[in-house]
Length: 476
Image 1 (cartoon, helix red, strand yellow):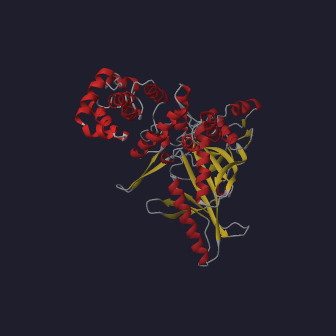
Image 2 (cartoon, one colour):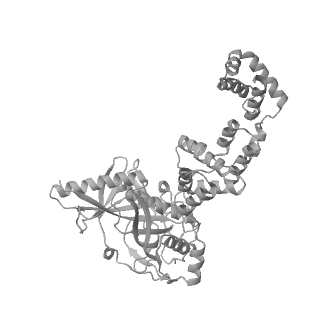
Image 3 (cartoon, helix red, strand yellow):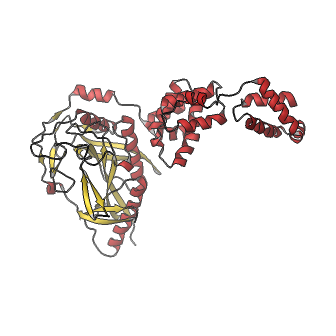
């Protein structure tokens, strides 16, 4: 068999985090009852006119600047004409001739080192509605809530050569966009979607093979599986003397199989023309500079700063900055005077444990920064001990619970009554002569049995340092 390499480019659609749609004032909130976030504009009623949402342009420009693109300061919208049941106007307002961002790149880390993935363009457009297929009644229903939700489409050059590089590129885009606040990039809710354009060719060849486009990819795992499947399918076709057909394919992640949807269209198939209802966009130098100056500290810079400024381990900084909600929690805690290492320990330890137990992603953590800071202060001030702290942390993890009030209501404050604690420990020592003898014979670990029984007797509320101090006084 010949030696092949895979050539991959991506079209990444990202729903922007505006409160209203791109051309009307309907809500963009996810999960509403079908067809409740709609109006004549986003359902394509005759005579309705679109009005551009300024925030969409700002977000698109910010993403373009963060991905090293050239901003097209004078751009416009075009109509992309096609018929599909979830497309109420029979056209989509998009950008073909003058996309808002062009010629950018992001850098990813690969096994061979840093690699630059070029971005051909980023353009703004409106999302389509959603078809809901009802197997019970054997029919399809249309929900137009998503119709008109603002999108940017990030079109890469065919620079990726493996599924690992694709995932690294998507992770980099996701983090950039999340740090900008331009989108939550939740693949499971469809706010970030990737179409994979893939072809194979003999290694060493400079000619591109015939590409296919694979859609319906809503997780990084599904993307990796679809790439592997399509790569093998194309190689099998070429090895058997057949040709690859340029087409759009739909991925079924349950069956781990893709099937043809339609032949792959080119730009001329959509009969693009300038949208007559929307005026051209002018991004002034002043507006562009204002957007540029508002760019946040991104993950790479933040990670380096955490290690340098806060002296936390590189591994901790890698994980915390990989998820913006965790980075926000860390910074809120440190800003309020918490120890950086203590904050890092709780994020890396208990947070990750609960995330795993709940089977959620770290960027879905709802813990509030103010609650996390107040929780760490309770530990730092000696109000609660580490044993009780785990209970309190679980209580506040899903948000909406004040840790200070929770500790008060459940009587969890650390018991610092020296005389009362000493009396309890004396009784436990009297009942454990073997542990005492072992301790006094030089086995200091034998005190662990006494500590454990003391914590049990005090319902976990005793001060561990005080316990150890009293045991030492009584037995040494």
